[in-house]
Image (tube, rainbow, N blue to C red):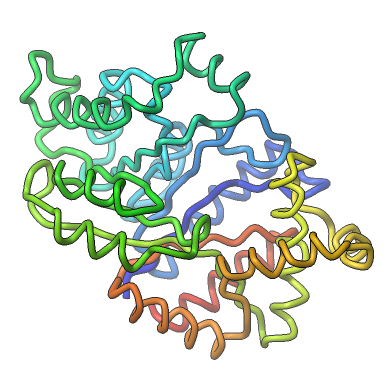
Length: 324
Protein backbone atom coordinates (compact mmCIF):
# COMPACT_ATOMS: atom_id res chain seq x y z
CA UNK A 1 0.00 0.00 0.00
CA UNK A 2 1.15 3.53 -0.81
CA UNK A 3 0.54 6.18 1.81
CA UNK A 4 0.69 9.95 1.62
CA UNK A 5 -0.44 12.83 3.81
CA UNK A 6 -2.93 15.59 3.04
CA UNK A 7 -2.12 18.69 5.07
CA UNK A 8 -4.77 21.33 5.77
CA UNK A 9 -2.47 23.03 8.30
CA UNK A 10 -5.30 23.15 10.83
CA UNK A 11 -3.74 25.41 13.45
CA UNK A 12 -4.22 24.50 17.11
CA UNK A 13 -5.38 27.18 19.55
CA UNK A 14 -2.27 28.80 21.01
CA UNK A 15 -0.06 28.14 17.97
CA UNK A 16 0.83 30.98 15.59
CA UNK A 17 0.71 30.71 11.80
CA UNK A 18 4.50 31.02 11.77
CA UNK A 19 4.88 28.18 14.25
CA UNK A 20 2.44 26.06 12.27
CA UNK A 21 4.40 26.60 9.06
CA UNK A 22 7.66 25.61 10.75
CA UNK A 23 6.05 22.56 12.33
CA UNK A 24 4.57 21.49 9.00
CA UNK A 25 7.94 21.52 7.23
CA UNK A 26 9.30 19.38 10.05
CA UNK A 27 6.33 17.05 9.55
CA UNK A 28 7.14 16.70 5.85
CA UNK A 29 10.74 15.83 6.65
CA UNK A 30 9.59 13.22 9.17
CA UNK A 31 7.09 11.79 6.66
CA UNK A 32 9.86 11.36 4.10
CA UNK A 33 12.04 9.55 6.65
CA UNK A 34 9.11 7.26 7.53
CA UNK A 35 8.58 6.25 3.91
CA UNK A 36 5.46 8.21 2.99
CA UNK A 37 5.20 8.60 -0.79
CA UNK A 38 3.78 12.12 -0.98
CA UNK A 39 2.76 15.17 1.02
CA UNK A 40 -0.06 17.32 -0.35
CA UNK A 41 -1.24 20.75 0.76
CA UNK A 42 -4.83 21.99 0.76
CA UNK A 43 -6.04 25.47 -0.17
CA UNK A 44 -8.32 27.31 2.25
CA UNK A 45 -9.14 31.01 2.59
CA UNK A 46 -10.89 33.28 5.03
CA UNK A 47 -10.39 31.07 8.10
CA UNK A 48 -8.46 31.58 11.33
CA UNK A 49 -7.56 27.94 11.65
CA UNK A 50 -6.61 26.41 8.32
CA UNK A 51 -3.48 28.27 7.31
CA UNK A 52 -2.60 26.50 4.06
CA UNK A 53 -3.78 29.19 1.65
CA UNK A 54 -1.11 28.85 -1.08
CA UNK A 55 -0.31 25.18 -1.76
CA UNK A 56 2.16 26.05 -4.51
CA UNK A 57 4.33 27.94 -2.02
CA UNK A 58 4.11 25.19 0.58
CA UNK A 59 5.04 22.65 -2.11
CA UNK A 60 8.17 24.63 -2.96
CA UNK A 61 9.13 25.05 0.68
CA UNK A 62 8.57 21.38 1.45
CA UNK A 63 10.47 20.16 -1.60
CA UNK A 64 13.40 22.44 -0.82
CA UNK A 65 13.81 20.85 2.62
CA UNK A 66 13.49 17.23 1.48
CA UNK A 67 15.15 15.02 -1.12
CA UNK A 68 12.67 12.64 -2.73
CA UNK A 69 9.15 12.74 -1.27
CA UNK A 70 6.60 13.97 -3.82
CA UNK A 71 4.77 17.20 -3.02
CA UNK A 72 1.37 18.18 -4.28
CA UNK A 73 -1.73 20.33 -4.00
CA UNK A 74 -4.99 19.00 -2.68
CA UNK A 75 -6.20 21.04 -4.36
CA UNK A 76 -5.66 24.27 -6.23
CA UNK A 77 -9.04 26.00 -6.68
CA UNK A 78 -8.89 26.06 -10.47
CA UNK A 79 -12.27 27.74 -11.21
CA UNK A 80 -11.00 30.93 -9.57
CA UNK A 81 -7.74 31.14 -11.52
CA UNK A 82 -6.19 31.34 -14.94
CA UNK A 83 -5.24 27.84 -16.15
CA UNK A 84 -2.20 29.33 -17.85
CA UNK A 85 -0.96 30.82 -14.59
CA UNK A 86 -1.52 27.55 -12.72
CA UNK A 87 0.28 25.64 -15.48
CA UNK A 88 3.21 28.05 -15.28
CA UNK A 89 3.45 27.59 -11.51
CA UNK A 90 3.47 23.81 -11.84
CA UNK A 91 6.03 23.94 -14.64
CA UNK A 92 8.27 26.18 -12.54
CA UNK A 93 8.05 23.73 -9.64
CA UNK A 94 8.79 20.83 -11.99
CA UNK A 95 11.93 22.63 -13.21
CA UNK A 96 13.09 22.99 -9.62
CA UNK A 97 12.13 19.49 -8.44
CA UNK A 98 11.80 17.16 -11.46
CA UNK A 99 9.58 14.14 -10.97
CA UNK A 100 8.31 15.26 -7.57
CA UNK A 101 5.44 17.62 -8.45
CA UNK A 102 1.78 16.58 -8.35
CA UNK A 103 -0.89 19.12 -9.18
CA UNK A 104 -4.24 18.24 -7.66
CA UNK A 105 -7.10 20.45 -8.85
CA UNK A 106 -10.35 21.12 -7.01
CA UNK A 107 -13.67 22.64 -7.99
CA UNK A 108 -14.41 24.36 -4.68
CA UNK A 109 -15.15 28.10 -4.61
CA UNK A 110 -12.74 28.42 -1.67
CA UNK A 111 -15.31 29.77 0.75
CA UNK A 112 -18.42 31.91 0.56
CA UNK A 113 -19.21 34.26 -2.32
CA UNK A 114 -17.34 37.09 -0.62
CA UNK A 115 -14.11 35.05 -0.67
CA UNK A 116 -14.73 33.56 -4.11
CA UNK A 117 -15.10 36.96 -5.75
CA UNK A 118 -11.83 38.17 -4.27
CA UNK A 119 -9.96 35.08 -5.41
CA UNK A 120 -11.40 35.54 -8.90
CA UNK A 121 -10.85 39.31 -9.06
CA UNK A 122 -14.63 39.95 -8.96
CA UNK A 123 -15.29 37.80 -12.03
CA UNK A 124 -18.60 35.91 -12.24
CA UNK A 125 -18.83 32.46 -10.73
CA UNK A 126 -16.90 30.06 -12.99
CA UNK A 127 -17.51 26.75 -11.20
CA UNK A 128 -19.31 25.43 -14.29
CA UNK A 129 -16.17 26.15 -16.34
CA UNK A 130 -14.09 23.68 -14.32
CA UNK A 131 -14.00 20.99 -17.06
CA UNK A 132 -12.91 23.53 -19.68
CA UNK A 133 -10.30 25.04 -17.39
CA UNK A 134 -8.96 21.60 -16.52
CA UNK A 135 -8.72 20.74 -20.20
CA UNK A 136 -6.92 24.01 -20.91
CA UNK A 137 -4.47 23.34 -18.06
CA UNK A 138 -3.61 19.99 -19.62
CA UNK A 139 -2.93 21.56 -23.02
CA UNK A 140 -0.73 24.27 -21.55
CA UNK A 141 1.39 21.59 -19.90
CA UNK A 142 1.49 18.98 -22.66
CA UNK A 143 2.51 21.44 -25.38
CA UNK A 144 -0.63 21.09 -27.50
CA UNK A 145 -1.86 24.64 -26.85
CA UNK A 146 -0.77 27.57 -29.00
CA UNK A 147 1.34 28.72 -26.08
CA UNK A 148 3.06 26.22 -23.82
CA UNK A 149 3.52 27.07 -20.17
CA UNK A 150 7.08 28.06 -19.32
CA UNK A 151 9.57 26.88 -18.32
CA UNK A 152 9.50 24.10 -20.92
CA UNK A 153 10.71 21.20 -18.84
CA UNK A 154 11.83 17.75 -20.00
CA UNK A 155 9.52 16.05 -17.53
CA UNK A 156 6.12 17.34 -16.54
CA UNK A 157 4.12 17.32 -13.32
CA UNK A 158 1.41 14.76 -12.69
CA UNK A 159 -2.16 16.05 -12.72
CA UNK A 160 -5.15 14.97 -10.63
CA UNK A 161 -8.73 16.05 -10.23
CA UNK A 162 -10.30 15.87 -6.78
CA UNK A 163 -13.90 14.78 -6.56
CA UNK A 164 -16.80 13.32 -4.59
CA UNK A 165 -18.81 11.42 -7.18
CA UNK A 166 -19.02 9.67 -10.53
CA UNK A 167 -19.26 12.84 -12.65
CA UNK A 168 -15.90 14.13 -11.43
CA UNK A 169 -14.43 10.64 -11.76
CA UNK A 170 -15.55 10.25 -15.38
CA UNK A 171 -14.18 13.71 -16.21
CA UNK A 172 -10.74 12.78 -14.86
CA UNK A 173 -10.82 9.47 -16.73
CA UNK A 174 -11.82 10.99 -20.06
CA UNK A 175 -9.11 13.65 -19.76
CA UNK A 176 -6.49 11.02 -18.97
CA UNK A 177 -5.39 12.40 -15.60
CA UNK A 178 -5.40 11.02 -12.06
CA UNK A 179 -8.37 11.03 -9.69
CA UNK A 180 -8.62 11.48 -5.92
CA UNK A 181 -11.82 10.65 -4.03
CA UNK A 182 -12.44 12.59 -0.82
CA UNK A 183 -13.76 9.98 1.63
CA UNK A 184 -12.87 12.46 4.39
CA UNK A 185 -15.53 14.77 2.97
CA UNK A 186 -18.15 12.32 1.68
CA UNK A 187 -17.83 8.70 2.83
CA UNK A 188 -20.56 7.44 0.50
CA UNK A 189 -20.08 6.75 -3.18
CA UNK A 190 -16.35 6.15 -3.25
CA UNK A 191 -16.46 2.65 -4.71
CA UNK A 192 -18.75 3.76 -7.54
CA UNK A 193 -16.63 6.84 -8.26
CA UNK A 194 -13.38 4.91 -8.46
CA UNK A 195 -14.97 2.26 -10.66
CA UNK A 196 -16.34 4.97 -12.94
CA UNK A 197 -12.92 6.57 -13.20
CA UNK A 198 -11.22 3.32 -14.15
CA UNK A 199 -13.92 2.48 -16.70
CA UNK A 200 -13.70 5.94 -18.27
CA UNK A 201 -9.92 6.30 -18.26
CA UNK A 202 -8.28 6.95 -21.61
CA UNK A 203 -4.50 7.41 -21.86
CA UNK A 204 -3.86 11.10 -22.38
CA UNK A 205 -1.83 13.46 -20.25
CA UNK A 206 -1.00 10.40 -18.13
CA UNK A 207 -0.42 7.01 -19.73
CA UNK A 208 -1.93 4.96 -16.91
CA UNK A 209 -4.85 5.48 -14.57
CA UNK A 210 -3.80 6.75 -11.15
CA UNK A 211 -6.40 6.73 -8.40
CA UNK A 212 -6.27 7.32 -4.67
CA UNK A 213 -8.61 8.19 -1.82
CA UNK A 214 -8.29 10.35 1.27
CA UNK A 215 -9.50 9.67 4.83
CA UNK A 216 -9.07 11.09 8.33
CA UNK A 217 -6.92 8.76 10.45
CA UNK A 218 -6.07 9.10 14.14
CA UNK A 219 -3.86 6.26 15.36
CA UNK A 220 -3.27 6.23 19.11
CA UNK A 221 -1.37 3.90 21.38
CA UNK A 222 -4.64 1.98 21.77
CA UNK A 223 -8.31 2.57 21.07
CA UNK A 224 -8.91 4.55 24.28
CA UNK A 225 -5.95 6.83 23.63
CA UNK A 226 -7.12 7.46 20.06
CA UNK A 227 -10.61 8.35 21.30
CA UNK A 228 -9.12 10.93 23.68
CA UNK A 229 -7.11 12.46 20.85
CA UNK A 230 -10.10 12.47 18.50
CA UNK A 231 -12.22 14.73 20.69
CA UNK A 232 -10.32 17.84 19.61
CA UNK A 233 -10.79 16.88 15.94
CA UNK A 234 -14.49 16.16 16.51
CA UNK A 235 -15.11 19.61 17.97
CA UNK A 236 -12.84 21.30 15.41
CA UNK A 237 -14.86 19.78 12.57
CA UNK A 238 -18.16 20.61 14.24
CA UNK A 239 -17.09 24.24 14.69
CA UNK A 240 -15.75 24.48 11.14
CA UNK A 241 -18.99 23.18 9.66
CA UNK A 242 -20.91 25.81 11.64
CA UNK A 243 -18.64 28.58 10.38
CA UNK A 244 -17.21 29.12 13.86
CA UNK A 245 -13.57 29.29 14.96
CA UNK A 246 -11.66 26.83 12.75
CA UNK A 247 -8.67 26.60 15.08
CA UNK A 248 -8.29 23.16 16.66
CA UNK A 249 -9.50 23.49 20.27
CA UNK A 250 -7.46 22.46 23.28
CA UNK A 251 -8.38 19.18 25.01
CA UNK A 252 -9.96 21.22 27.83
CA UNK A 253 -12.05 23.28 25.39
CA UNK A 254 -13.08 20.13 23.54
CA UNK A 255 -14.09 18.37 26.77
CA UNK A 256 -16.19 21.36 27.84
CA UNK A 257 -17.94 21.42 24.47
CA UNK A 258 -18.48 17.65 24.56
CA UNK A 259 -20.21 17.91 27.94
CA UNK A 260 -22.66 20.45 26.53
CA UNK A 261 -23.50 18.89 23.14
CA UNK A 262 -27.14 18.96 22.14
CA UNK A 263 -28.77 16.05 20.36
CA UNK A 264 -28.25 17.50 16.88
CA UNK A 265 -24.55 18.10 17.54
CA UNK A 266 -24.11 14.57 18.89
CA UNK A 267 -25.70 13.19 15.74
CA UNK A 268 -23.43 15.36 13.59
CA UNK A 269 -20.32 14.05 15.36
CA UNK A 270 -21.54 10.47 14.89
CA UNK A 271 -22.11 11.17 11.21
CA UNK A 272 -18.69 12.80 10.85
CA UNK A 273 -17.06 9.73 12.39
CA UNK A 274 -17.97 7.87 9.18
CA UNK A 275 -15.33 10.04 7.51
CA UNK A 276 -12.66 8.90 9.97
CA UNK A 277 -10.65 5.92 11.13
CA UNK A 278 -9.93 6.20 14.85
CA UNK A 279 -8.23 3.62 17.03
CA UNK A 280 -5.07 1.89 18.13
CA UNK A 281 -2.78 0.32 15.52
CA UNK A 282 -4.76 -2.93 15.21
CA UNK A 283 -8.08 -1.11 14.81
CA UNK A 284 -6.64 1.35 12.30
CA UNK A 285 -5.15 -1.44 10.20
CA UNK A 286 -8.36 -3.46 10.21
CA UNK A 287 -10.46 -0.48 9.15
CA UNK A 288 -8.02 0.89 6.58
CA UNK A 289 -7.57 -2.58 5.11
CA UNK A 290 -11.35 -2.84 4.83
CA UNK A 291 -11.55 0.48 2.98
CA UNK A 292 -8.65 -0.64 0.80
CA UNK A 293 -10.65 -3.75 -0.13
CA UNK A 294 -13.97 -1.94 -0.59
CA UNK A 295 -12.44 0.75 -2.78
CA UNK A 296 -10.02 -1.62 -4.55
CA UNK A 297 -7.52 1.17 -3.97
CA UNK A 298 -3.90 0.72 -2.95
CA UNK A 299 -3.01 4.41 -2.63
CA UNK A 300 -4.28 6.53 0.27
CA UNK A 301 -3.83 10.05 1.55
CA UNK A 302 -4.46 10.43 5.28
CA UNK A 303 -5.00 13.54 7.37
CA UNK A 304 -5.10 14.20 11.08
CA UNK A 305 -6.26 17.47 12.64
CA UNK A 306 -5.82 17.12 16.39
CA UNK A 307 -4.59 19.74 18.85
CA UNK A 308 -1.36 18.11 20.00
CA UNK A 309 1.10 18.41 17.11
CA UNK A 310 3.51 15.91 18.70
CA UNK A 311 0.70 13.37 18.93
CA UNK A 312 -0.23 14.17 15.33
CA UNK A 313 3.27 13.18 14.25
CA UNK A 314 3.18 10.07 16.42
CA UNK A 315 -0.12 9.09 14.79
CA UNK A 316 1.57 9.23 11.39
CA UNK A 317 4.49 7.24 12.80
CA UNK A 318 2.17 4.50 14.05
CA UNK A 319 0.41 4.26 10.69
CA UNK A 320 3.77 4.11 8.91
CA UNK A 321 4.84 1.25 11.17
CA UNK A 322 1.80 -0.72 9.98
CA UNK A 323 2.45 -0.38 6.26
CA UNK A 324 5.75 1.26 5.32
